[in-house]
Length: 144
Image (cartoon, rainbow, N blue to C red; front, side, top):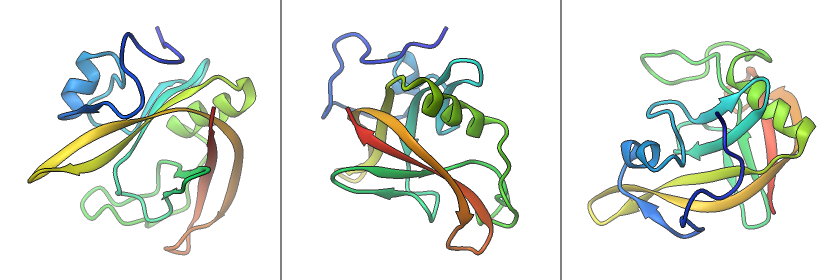
């Protein structure tokens, strides 16, 4: 069952070692995908991992690229995205206004970790050409 909002004692700025640690803590359940939630209730958490060219993390807001249309071997965008799958989770969050936990992959020492950035709300969704020239869903989130 999805949980919206902070989980347990974890707060913005906390860093966990890996995706498995995030999952075990109940912060971001899937260990591979970037969006956790459901099409019926919305996204409960997302991860920015510098894998999508159209993601943009700024001080006052962030743009999170939708999923789909990528070549599984190269990770490059090779087709238009559709409003399906995990894109539906973020679209539902736009409708409901429920908070989304945001995590960002960061460099920690010689490796990587995941920092909890805090609670955000999805405030817009646009379908436009991305940097690779294909139509992608771009979700704008702002801090609570």
